[in-house]
Length: 576
Image 1 (cartoon, rainbow, N blue to C red):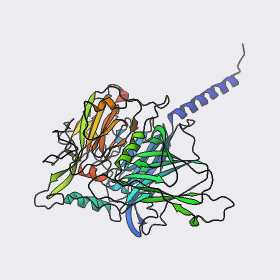
Image 2 (cartoon, rainbow, N blue to C red; image 1 turned 90 degrees about the vertical axis):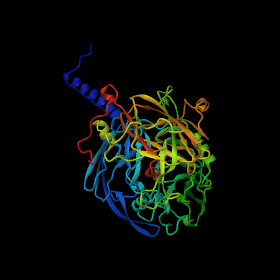
Image 3 (cartoon, one colour; image 1 turned 30 degrees about the vertical axis):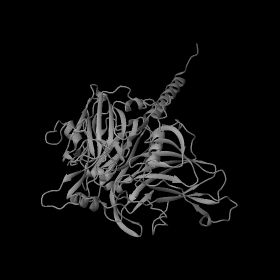
Image 4 (tube, helix red, strand yellow; image 1 turned 45 degrees about the vertical axis):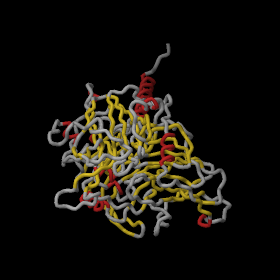
């Protein structure tokens, strides 16, 4: 028997303690602190200066860079005249609904000179998401990337890239956007369209007075770059392409997907996509335009312009040729209404569904819902002239209910059982009346309005079919669900057929997302498990449609066990 001296035993105990502590830290993550000061800043684009709302004076805003398992604490201090709230788009917020951020849904907004601490943990997620303001149209300039790296020592399920680059698309108005949307909501007409799209905050060389405002990506030959694409534009889906280069899609909405090559990426507002860019083996005698322009299907006017950046190869050491003398090659982008290409791209996205990253698709369904999504009209207030068709106001709805924002946060009123007069739990599971959804619209296209929600028992499995309508005009609608990822099990055109279409559902490796485009003149079916107690917003991520009422909320009840219940609100929760 080997004897062990007290000193040796002490070192052995210390070593075991340190090793187990490190192993635990690797699993548990660390706490990361951020400070967001909401402040005004003068910014010049397109030869015009305007005062915009920013975080820390930055546009786009700062990157939140964390690892899976980390706890994130962000103190937001409001120094501007507007009420503000921040949403961490795509973060599951498991039992941390108080930190989700949509104003009047999970919190009252942060008023001028007030602050709020958002406190949440990144659980079971890695990839690219983003944060943005979630009140009125303030997200037009209040947005930035969320980069979630895998846990330390855990590799990507694709070749390790040489470098990672966030690319965040936005939308720019010369005029004040709060004035634009407020006037539109008063008159009932459509708001003015944007003047430009932006590429990491810069419009790029294809706009007048903007050649200096161009994002440049300098690359080395024979390397793999990971581009983290984010669409933070207010009202437009975008096609993206790089001249003479193929891209490999490896992730969507912070979920790994089966890799596929493409030269065009479709990305709706609210969606994120990882793409691998493999550079050419030798230095090409050219520079390459990276461009994005809209995919638009509706009847309304839209900003039909193109934002661009430039892909530049580092010159070889023996080169004397200047970059500005090189040929600039441009990509061929699809026509603005190429629904066939948009659908083909969407259908290629499939979950990786590997042993490490399984697709946990609900195989049985407890609750079925069928929601129509689209436009409509509401009556003009008395003694007022309105700019909608026949003196009406433009509106949008889900199952013909145009959602009215409450005066107090729904989560608070739900948690303290104070729903009386604030919301009702009678949101319709099906349209109030059947019609040919994608054919000739019914005679009466007036919407109803109210603050109605759906209540779900904890851990119930949900199947939701969302059907576009042709009322006023068929249009693609990117629907975003807070608090959950869902599986996109089916997609089609025309009217959904509940008897024949479910047989075609993909229940093996469907895309897992937080935002999905309901096809123009078609439908999409999703499934999710209601395993996150709280109140969860669901809305179109075209901001104009959200403003018009294309939104609703789900209440997921507490489970029976302590870890299945929503904790009480933090003490600094803003008051209305």
